[in-house]
Length: 224
Image (cartoon, rainbow, N blue to C red; front, side):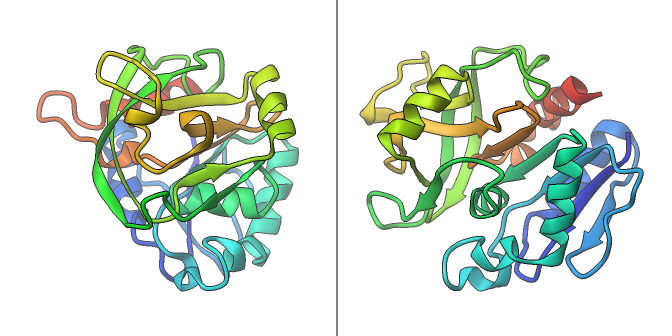
């Protein structure tokens, strides 16, 4: 598998992704600067977290208008899997590759901690091999509050596009376990064709001495 990681001015999780992918596949992914071209043989595109272009205007707004995102859109039309993490998720919504948008957290503060997620959809290319119903991952964001209209929310529910929800350690989903105010506790969603994933938590940051990068490993192996 040929994986390309898109890098913008202000990206700061790109090396985390590169290190994680290398530990999983023993292959260094292609690091693509935003002014360059995505290799034609790319099988999987990842847009990492950070603060692309300083998050001026809105988070991900400037990056979404860049030429490389036009290339990402072209790859999406070919069915190439695309994953956006944190700022990458914001970019994908700004580029209209995913529905909704991300706004400032309900408490108006930057949040950096570990949370629990319930896997809502195991029948997509990203989560087929995610073994646990509840997983633990870190978050680090100030604009992670996912919002959509009521009509769009109903559509993504009906189309089974919700893939992760914030929850308790036991899998309980309610406002108490919602760190940022996201509607319906949504932490990750899919495109209509289920080949684009956007999520606020950072699977590339989850490491364990015995099972290093296990969540990212399960996501990558689901795509392989």
